[in-house]
Every structure is written in structure tokens, then in C-alpha cells.
Image (tube, rainbow, N blue to C red; front, side):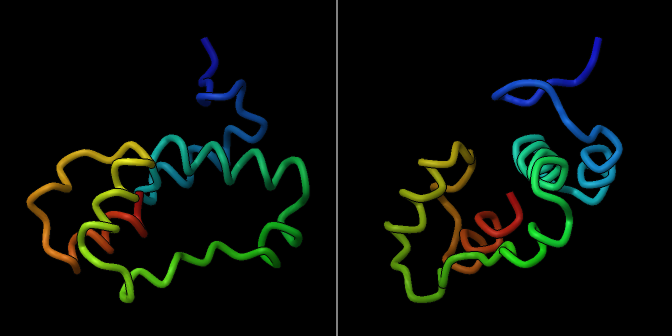
Length: 89
């Protein structure tokens, strides 16, 4: 049975597996691998994967963002840990 992302089938399984092995979440690996297949690696690289400027956010806002994207275990985290979680999910 093939791997499937939340929104459908994977378009580039090899890249997906490589990203997962590097620590990317299932969602992030599927999103990136499908974008590369759809638009090409140069277009995806040009867009970049910039994280938000989380250092300027308050802890309550960081926790709300973590909740929005479905992270767990964020309620007791300090600001630096929250930022790390958000950038590496």
C-alpha cells in the first residue's frame, strides 16, 4: 500500500523518504515533495522555506500557532523551545 499524505498521494516518494529521514514531519515532507514534483526544485528553492520571525512573538502567540498546526507538548515549553518546535515541525 503506497504512502499517502493528508491531502492525497505522494508525488515524489524518494524525496519524501529522504526528508523524513532528515527529521521532517510527515506533513512537511509530503508538502515539500509534492511541491517539488509540481513546480520543480528551482521554483521551490526560490520561494524558500522561511520561518516566521518568531523571536518577536509572545509565548501565548507561539503556543496558539503550535496549536493551529497540530503540535502537541507545547504548553510547558519556554519561548526558545516553542520556536524550535515551530521551525522543525
